Image (cartoon, rainbow over all chains, first blue to last red; front, top):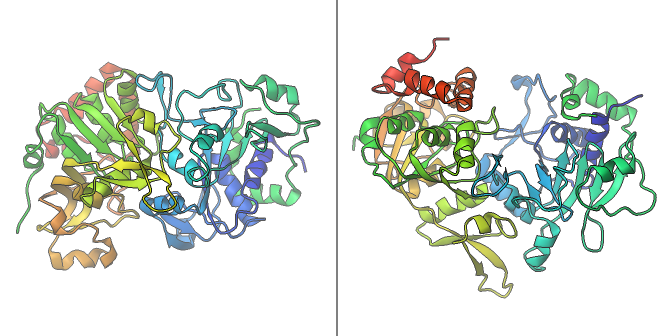
Amino acid sequence: MTFTRAEVCTVAVAEVFRGDGEILASAFGTIPALAIRLAKLTFEPDLLMTDGVAFLRADVPPMHGDAESEAVVEGWLPFRRVFDLLWSGRRHIVMVASQIDRHGNHNFACIGDFRKPKAQLLGMRGAPGNTINHPTSYWIPNHSPAVFVEAVDVVSGVGYDRAAALGDRSKRFHEIRRVVSNLGVFDFATPDHSMRLVSVHPGVRVEDVVENTGFPLVIEGEVPETRAPSDAELKLLREKIDPRGAGQKEVRV
Amino acid sequence: MDKRTTAAQAVAELRDGMTLGIGGWGSRRKPMALVREILRTPLKDLTLVSYGGPDVGLLCAAGKLRKVVYGFVSLDSIPLEPHFRLARQAAAIEAAELDEGMLQWGLYAAALRLPFLPTRAGLGSDVLSINPDFRRVKSPYDDGEELVAMPAIHLDVAFIHMNRADARGNGQFLGPDPYFDDLFCMAAKRRFMSCEKIVETADLLKGGSVHTLAINRSMVDGVIETPNGAHFTECPPDYGRDEDFQREYAATARDPKAWSAFKGRYLDLPDEQAYQEALPTT
């Protein structure tokens, strides 16, 4: 079957949860919300998922057009219990980023000087607590030098250099698992934990990634292609998870 | 004791420069009738502590705030609160931006009369440079771990909104999430609870299980019945968010003329009843 870039991205984000087991999978953005559903329906059936309000959902509802009456609720998770759970570490979140640097420092709080920002964005939200307590990955639908920057304006999510400076004990729960953009997949599996290009999506050249990144990436030898969605995954995405194609709107190609 | 009072009497306890905590979360179950009452006064220089929504935006737009303590300010269906953004981008307010879990911890410390509570949240992030008075603490046990000592956030006054309450100050939420309203009350010297409806104490459990009684009367000094008082934020199951009205409110940040028209139509009114009557009929 032929597939779109958005579908490749959805599978790549789903892959960040592989091996996570019985933890809460959380998402910012549409593609990550689709990806959690896909992971749960295929290789990570034990993931916990919320409805975005205060309930844990045992079933996997479609992205839109969900009938409340059919919801299978398996637990209650109001915000304060989300905080308890995330501080206990049993969670992996995919957050969006307005800026990210080579060490994985993340910003979605504001652009410019914090005291008088050019643009106030989301604020710190839970990013400081998330990144120091449990695995975090990032989803970036608009890969550009304005997002992949030399230095972020404000650090909301903690990167590897800042975590290292805290010492072994304080950083022991810190992990930036992976970064997925509309162009490729990245991780920090290098000696100094600087960002590495893991794969480029089908149709993307390594040069495209390099040109759109505002810092030098670690590139080791021949860079493989991100795996293509299987027919079974495409069928699940198109028929069950996202019949209205919400994911297609989030990725520009 | 009968604690029924009015929005005007509750707001009359505020003084310039006080620290006010407002319950709810984003554009959800906010005590908006009490916020609107603040807008009718000459109060100024308030410090506002909030899981921020249009409470923050309206008070920013009206020039009531000196400082905001928050983890985010959002209208939920509109992710960024436009009036708050304007105030931030003009440096019109002092911003004490926190991790949202740290905000809970600060309120909880104040509630328990502790000087601080330790947490890992904030370490390595710019929360600690934005709030340079926050200190670290070393575990006194063998692990010696360094943590953030989140200081207690003491409130002069707290405002919350519940679905039901009795006249003595017992409060009931009937929606999915109690948020942190109990902590706001426990962290404050004076505590005011507005509600959709005041009922007999014996009738509280007719509306929901005992687990919905999040606020007990030792946590409340005054109860105010304000039907539709969380408008335009959501207050389920009584009503959802008024998305049309919220969009109209958000659009006024683009143009000072639109804001003054909105203010004239909905805010420069003598009382809450006049506000409710001015709302478009649907």
